[in-house]
Image (cartoon, rainbow, N blue to C red; front, side, top):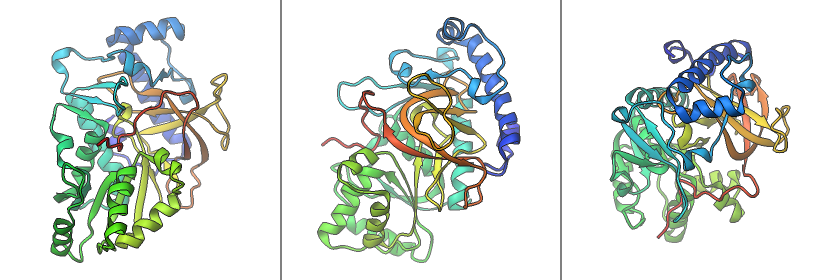
Length: 355
């Protein structure tokens, strides 16, 4: 893992990346086989026993829903440093992800390595497009809280855009922006909340916030915006209208593989870094789809040490657009995510706010 951490997240081509990542994933499969009884039973019964894989597509995967039904961990109870939970609407089961200090530390380092490629390495004044109460329980984080905590690494001075009733703090934001006039301001939030409580409020009040030098990173919640017929382009144009922001980057990620996010580049593509990979599988027989064909998204991550989450079949549909040839210059696969599978359990997005 130390070798991976020293590498640039987007410099290695397919051959080099696959070799490095495969070695790490084979190690993790063996480690979790030895230390997690439920995972060991799965490998023995479903995969015919433990074996080293010769290709990334051969790494055994768990369905993402298993983390809602079983508490999977490869560490002793006393080594649990933090428990993270997925988002969910009332009454739904949520995933519980058990982290030790090693895994939590890897998540932070990798997130910093990926995001700094888009924001620069310096910490910036930060606007958190959320409310302060999300982080009340520091030992058990929802996906929403985990996102805020993780991305706060890039912020120096911080302000929350909303109070706990989700009312926009216009006067506080104006003062904050004026204080850091001329500097790059970093903004982070969840897609639907940004649209619903930030954009719409500014439109309603006919207010303009001067954030022309801002950098916004956002994720989650596209299903709600699609239902409102809001495209990615309209989202960006809308924000530009109310605050002048031009640098807007979506990302794809999940609490089951925190840290290994897929950032949107300047060309609008979501990129896998050296720390992760994506395989698209046919939804009928789980065979590997060729580039350009839609299927179920399998995500691979080099990070999960405390729980067997290094290879997960998600309930999302996507396709691989290309590899090592994105016009932005970053190496690795770049993908399109289309949303949830039909008949998959409807899961509340981490950005969903229920009044």
